[in-house]
Length: 252
Image 1 (cartoon, rainbow, N blue to C red):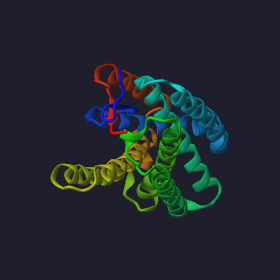
Image 2 (image 1 turned 120 degrees about the vertical axis):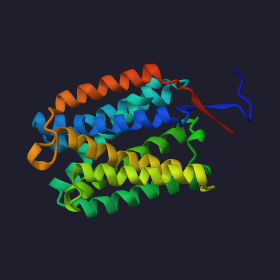
Image 3 (image 1 turned 90 degrees about the horizontal axis):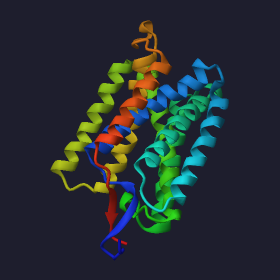
């Protein structure tokens, strides 16, 4: 395919309804998968973070080196960002004693700093611009911070603020509905709305994941973390096979 100034193929997918369904499934898997390693296997948050950080680094390098958009590789990288985000956020907020408010504040600052650095360096934070290695580095670092933030924010809402897991899902689902309404009925920047939705789907996945595997006495459904993770992997695989996947396009 000849690349022209108006026909440049990105290495990330077009943002469709299927994209958001897969994103929520992936972020939910990040919660159950991360907890499976750090809690169910008893390895702890630090060891879990180290394991998932290695996986994250490996798949990000593969994604950057790939010559074109590959759906399986892309969604594997998304899952890797959300699992390392889960264990890293849990380590920071629980074992380092920062707490949910402190962890959330630090991660908001890191996310904002990543987006600002990306914009100041390359002039755009639009996903359609993700076509070159330097842009991809900014993209995946920003996503990793957003996934880590989502874990801390989800746990803070469900636990410390007392909404519970179902209530937390309602809060973040409602916020996503507001973002969707702004997309369809206002002229707010599509790039801004994308990143708002991207951030909010992570705490939604976090509280849904906790809803699935936490004990009944804690307000969960007491599913095995392994079973929940297995079901989510199957659902993600089905969605990758069923949904159409096209790379995003944008001006050079």
